[in-house]
Image 1 (cartoon, rainbow, N blue to C red):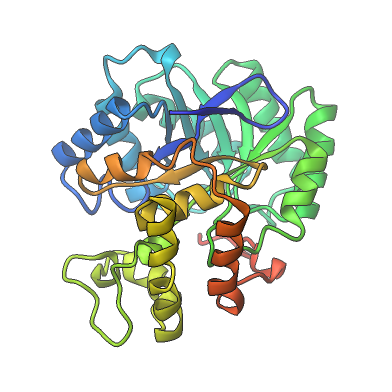
Image 2: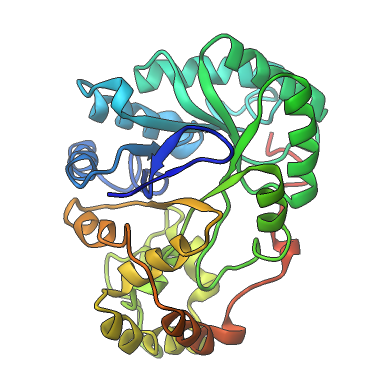
Length: 334
């Protein structure tokens, strides 16, 4: 495993982060989830990402149980706040001071830890003054409940505004967690340049485009049984934008490129995002522990310039690049 600094800080994370978004507490049984976490640790992953909204807090509980007994100082544990939790009442969502201060305490209890290494604003909250949100984060840092603060899916302007306030309040934003893959490049034109200017790293999710870049989905054929595209708990909804024959055919054209580079398709997809110097880590998940051994091999891989060009030539216009696709909900869910 290789490690990279997160933002303009001295904090290092593993190039591969284990995330438990669409799996733990919902899609897979807890014992299998624990096996996946153990496999991640065995593979050298030290960074783990979750959120209170995942499976309505159950994912944090599963992760906390799975990591119990590990040396806390050897781990980097990330979680997030914004999405609706609990009974999803009027104050159970967003980035108000009330929700943030109550949420960090709930997350720490479920994760069975005194602090998280990185606490992230899961989206931008248009219903709460940014000053209120940033003050709450500053207080959490001073209380020692979070060591660092990050955000997720914020635009370039939102990052700049948050950066100014964080510096005034005595802390800094060091990370953003956007979607990023060969097929979803919306951060490249605005978010990445702003982040480089501000000292913010990307921790990217869905580097395999919800599994499409694994190559297992074939044009003109039904999705394999048991795959994410057939999962009605959320996976199918997230992946449907890529389930077009032109996209699936383009992905099949990546197979000889991966083979020439000596990589599997998942390794090529993860290695590709890690070629971006502003990316500190790629988040991968697993519903079976054996899936991780393949993905983790993408750490430390350098793709030759001609390989990167071949990928661009194949993907071309299939990729979404519109920076306006970086967005947060206009209103809260509750």
